[in-house]
Length: 444
Ligand SMILES: NC(=O)c1ccc[n+]([C@@H]2O[C@H](COP(=O)([O-])OP(=O)(O)OC[C@H]3O[C@@H](n4cnc5c(N)ncnc54)[C@H](O)[C@@H]3O)[C@@H](O)[C@H]2O)c1
Image (tube, rainbow, N blue to C red):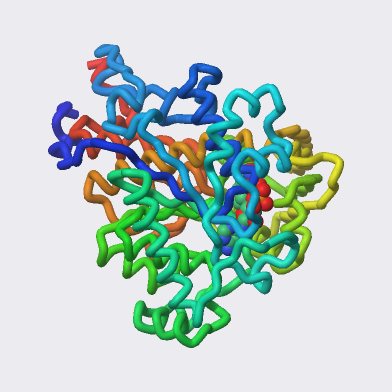
């Protein structure tokens, strides 16, 4: 294949000039681990481990060309030195107090950046305990005459943050609690329906949707780290397209689901069958406490369950994957704090139907895995905006358990296809040749 055939002209990309504001609804374990980490990296105290944008390389051209720059050298991303942080939380703790309470980072890592973290205090949140039931000390909450009024206050917060901090651009990454399960309904059908529903305080309009609406109205890209419906509705997707703003979601792919999207493509690649996959977790942080509520767990469960079916395609391979049993449990167990332990028991079968088992025992640290994802999503969402991308950013599926996709399109869950899609999108935008891995040119 001639090298030029898969090459698009380079997109017009506005430079990453000036500062980039990163606003997080939620200043809990994930958000504070992310902020503390970025500040530690800026001070030379840590390395950005787990971040593709900072550490991964990208091959350009032929293998023999030996051109593999780091992604951050290839693509004009905002520099870590240019990031400015802000957020909202119904709990009034500053970022240092919140980080200390969440127990992810040790004192030896928090003390050197304590002053910086103490300077980040949450703006009053749009919060309603009907959607997240297990939180206490929620005193830092906005009042308004209806949901629309509350959303307008969020818009004002974004504008004030911009002018007070002197940032040129802003992105929003949802790092707040998982809300109760909501199905897309009449209130989310069109933008008009959505705005009327906000004015009428419709119960299908959850707080996260108000943040997403405010974000899009202000031209701020929105990334959704939780499984809530949030921006994944026809109304808000229409708004994103109309305003030319990139969105992505849902639910950071960090521990057990990440493992699932590594192992299950391997089983399918070898045409090995699956009889069942049982996953259980113990988790003792605030997220675990919120997920102990059945309504919030239902949102998470839906997000976790969709993965295997989409990857294994039982409709195409009924002899291998028809009717496999898939069970996911999360148990709130306080002594473990943020250090989740997950067990997976995978019942597979091979040649002549003989059964085998795989056991995975993953002792992971949830927020340590999530923090670099927040960083990459902030940087790539800002990059997408500057490159003129709008609406759903499917190339960011890599980061999500439940990736958003165009209506009628099956989401892509396979981690390795997601990685190829991400890198090829960067090559495409930068006017570089797509890498197909065909490789026949080396043997001509
Ligand atoms: N850590 C992971 O590996 C991981 C993976 C996937 C998804 N997530 C999701 O990321 C989110 C954050 O996780 P965490 O461990 O930091 O939880 P956390 O409980 O430590 O922090 C969440 C914060 O959000 C705040 N909050 C709740 N409702 C809010 C609202 N309406 N507006 C603003 N703030 C609000 C809470 O007060 C809390 O401080 C959760 O939804 C979680 O399910 C985490």
